[in-house]
Length: 336
Image (tube, rainbow, N blue to C red):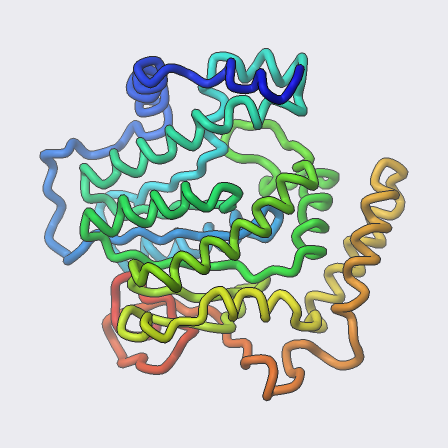
């Protein structure tokens, strides 16, 4: 199937809207409050965007953030959790493509899944619900649209950017596929091996998203986080004029691995190297990792070059937390 024929799978606007309203809303959001429902007043609703290339670890950190939102926000309704990939299964051609042309299934149904993600965000906004959105930023314009949707609705917008070196996310893709981890699955989608081109496009797209945050100043807070929930940079709205988010992201991707990161990578590579099907990809990842494996520990490297890694903690309106860039506020002002 030539690439130009992918457009044949794009749904008409009225068909797309009908599927969203008749299938996606009842199945994915059965407990959404009605637009007329008014939750107890607690200030602006909160949107947290977790952003990272495929394989970076969005699923794991999102679980941690969701748990913290339940505690810190103390809302009677659970926050909505939006992931674009989960909507692909509702495309009428998806099941057939998975069987006949699995390498095209994502590309053919992705545009409508992304449209449904925007519809879901707008539906959440109509109900003034808290929400966590996971984005791989393969299409930075979609990320920009999400930021604008929440910003224009007067949401407090907090963004978590995952600064994960390319070889670690490539390795993460292999591990979750061959180990059949939940991270390899989006909702009801089958575990799949993400193509290298998809990874590389999202890896580059993340820089575009970070640059947009620098330019627009629309986020109330942005933090840059490594694997293991270690924060390297943070900025809030008062500091956005001098924000250097894209610079922090790019630089952090070049930091030598910490001892823990290196130990995990070595163990993963050792296990995968026993699988003949993974030989070529394992060799490539091992080669990509070489520049990041140096004597010492990246966590405590050259302090003039690398910022101190601080563990991620979550906001609470208890104690003042001024100057602590590792606190994700979740709409609050202090540190737990």
